[in-house]
Length: 459
Image (cartoon, rainbow, N blue to C red):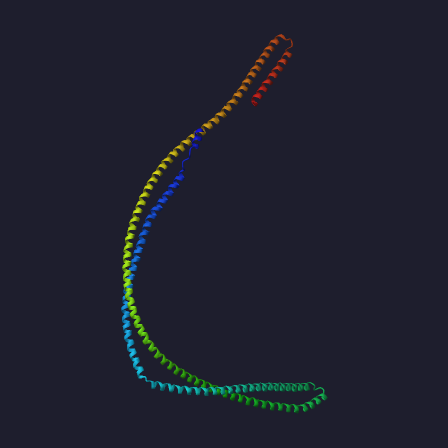
């Protein structure tokens, strides 16, 4: 037990799992670093190549722009010369036309245009007056038409009333005839009805004739009013057609006026445009000269920028080559350092593995000592149990020995009693009394022996 406590008091070495975890972490870090080194190198190389490609593209673009600018300058100069010749020829033709157009012809054209304008204005005034009259007539016809429509509506209403009265009269006559036929049994009443019917029929016929005459007259008046309406509508349509024709004439005249005005304004604008074109051509010619000079200056600037860019590209190439060399050297140094660290770490790992094997052996020894101690403890337990069993056995042996001694004493007593009995039997006169005494003592001794046996068994 003291050995076990001493071993527990010692500092425990790191466990195998911790060592394996640390080893795996270190190996993972080393592998990550190894993986990042070529990636970083490739990234640097790719960045350098991309920069070089970008600079080369810029160089090509600058060359293209220079070439394009030269071509554009040549084309522009050619276009300017062609436009210059065209403008000069056009200016000459315009000068000839202006010289041909004298001031007298222009004045004549202006006077003729003024006369036409005055005529058109007079025609416009006449057409406006005619339009006003036509509109007034149209309003009169519309009012007359409305009155005629009202009268027609009234006549139609009266006609409907007359038709209703006629229908009522016919219905009354029919009813009276039916009632006269149904009452044929009473002759007096039939005669009275006949008299009344004879009296009423001529009056009803007169009324009916009057109504027919009125209806015929009303139809005539309606027909005459409808004819008047048709005539008024025709006159209205004719007036509207006249008004439309006048409006179209006015519109045509106004269009002609507008055309003449636009022609005058167009001629004025052409003259102004020609003068402005002359001025613009002169200013454009001067601008072209200035742009040509500016393009020559830009060409010189671009050539200088190209030279500067080429120099900067070469300087950057030198700098990047030096940086590549330094980076490669630094990477090599880092790889050497990492290799040294890996070797040292591998040595440490081998030492740790050796220590782990030693600790394993010590653990095995400790396990064996523990098993031995457990066995000794179990033996001690068994020895104690056996010693207790021996003590119990010794106690039982003592009890048995005591029992044996008691039995021997009882046997000796029985023998003594028997001897005494036998001796007394020779001396005594009554053999029955002697046998009774002997049997009672023997029973007592047997009872004592049984009691000793029971007590021994219980113990």
